[in-house]
Length: 62
Image 1 (cartoon, rainbow, N blue to C red):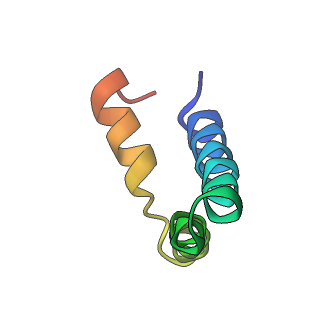
Image 2: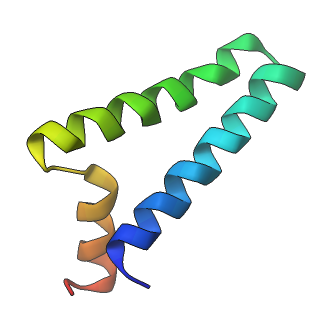
């Protein structure tokens, strides 16, 4: 799996889990979704993605 595919799966999973937590448990559960969205936006400007960096360190750079 490429690091880009990993980041997309991770972001999608976190957003869906966060939405479920916010809806069924506590409105503060929406915060991780907001964090993921902000991180995706900042990565388009800076080119830096912490999740991709961590994936590359664990799995090895492509």
